Amino acid sequence: MTDEALKQRNDEQLATCWPAFANKIRAVISDMAGHGYRCRIQQSWRSPQEQLEAFNSGHSKLRFGFHNCTGPNGEKQALAVDLLDDDRPNEETMKYSLMLYSSAHSHGLTTGALYGLSPKMKQAFVNAALGKDWDNQKVKRGWDESHVDCGNQITPAYAKAGARI
Image (cartoon, rainbow, N blue to C red):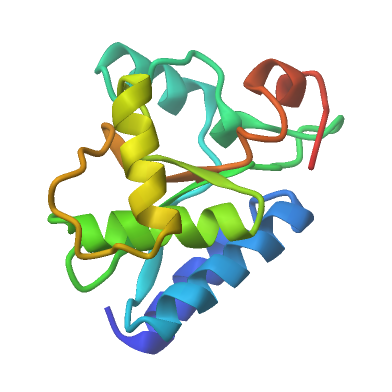
């Protein structure tokens, strides 16, 4: 994708996010660009039908998640994005996953890189990411490493009830 098309896509996806969350994602994208990555928001807001399809296919463990948030009048207010390396969208490297987690963490966000890991494996991944040991190939990562959300601040249930970051 060209740089202009990438920027346009990201802007369109960010427009479906809660503004404070969108600003944090912009900061993460900027951080990652500083490391030479061209990040693409593959998806931000997701309809209830798309969420159900993701749940039924095993791509999500939730029937309602941060992707599905809406305002009181139905306006899209996603609190999650799937943020891919546009140059390697089908082969996320461990380095990308570690850097993405580190950047997200620095902006009060988290990633799906911890999903499905044991407490010991989570701690090893976090230690590598926050210790900037980005070439570490010994750690394991969870099943949704490109997913970024505000899950360390609120739960999906609170977000569904209208809570925002």
